[in-house]
Length: 592
Image: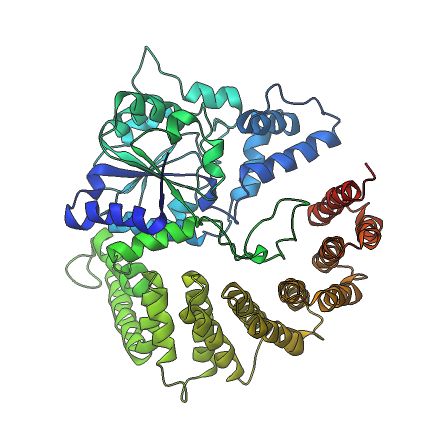
């Protein structure tokens, strides 16, 4: 199996795009549900919801085969037997959901056009199409076999192929037989998704992001045929986790022209990753995971590599609108002419004037707009240094707030455990502390910045500094009552417990877990209860490490006693962890 890291893969692609100017000829994107998270849940989460609904109607027969496609298909059909029900469910799930950063960054790449203008996806959602329209592109969409003739391979337009359809129509394919049928060839027509993919793959290789590779769907079936016959250039499969490659078929991962692009090989501390149940300490609720390669991260790296310009629709949306009006409307030779009964020439004149005013405003706040442009190009380190270099003495409250938000985005986007990342978090705090009126969102952002600073310091082995940062979160916000701030304090305390353990201060760590339970154990909101349960599980684990097995069992039992009847998924997960950990502890005590 060929495995490379993100930087190497991007270097390969950049060479083709910038040095040989062949990117749009050689590549196309295959993207899956991973680019639409969190706006749209992934299949695994949907499967759990389908099963819950099916069980409400006592439809509990298990799927005939235990693979991802069959489980998803089975429980979807059990929960919603009618096609229109499934269409309506998907519409409720997807409609008007926010366009994710991954979709926006992919749209930016497609508008630039040098990597490719073609995307193939099994997704039902329209987030990418909406993202493209948001930044000024009008994509051609193919979402049914009868529309494949719309796609001009190598054409100048941005083109989206939804191989299983879109959520608007009841003929979208979301059950196993429907998906397999979409993958089939036809002896009667070439207007099939299968034939279209064969034609695309004859010239181009996929850059695969956020797609789990359901063996048997039209994408995997066509890719297998092409790999068996030989493919012209490399396939780059960006894996969300290192385990993803183990779930993919051997014909794919062992092919010499397929490169599996992996996240880092190991994490240095459990607070950056998901941890196997019962084997080590809880992941401490930190979303900062080194063992995952996010879709947004992939697209950001590509944008950095090719140096894509900021779209006009984002840089100056008023000028973009004026240009759209001018291109689309015949206003006649003068305002008020018989050919301009709607007075559109006057509208365009006013839009042009507004665009000039907007540009003047940008010039007045040029430094802040420069930071925004750096972020739009995924130049996170440069953005942090640009913010740090600004004279902040004369900035308004609004400008300070905007810069704090930009500093957070830059630090979180950088995500590399560097001094620059730490500087970004410090800038958030300094900027908010310089404000007179601080609303809840800014306080939450500050709490997150300090907590992420602590996480990063812990990752760097600077544990005493990390402890001080966790204490700062508690000192600043420990008495706040808003749920969003309580969550940040709870996570800081649980993370602090881990750092104390790493320093060998076990009794202090246990005391911190007790503090979490004291603060949040009797709360009514799910988030606080989740962290209290999490603290108890971690306490049990550490007691087990200290050889205090009976006390560890008592901690696990307390989780079950508190939350054993809970119906919320977050709490049920903690109960499951407690029970699995209790089983392991009983085994260590010889009480099998």
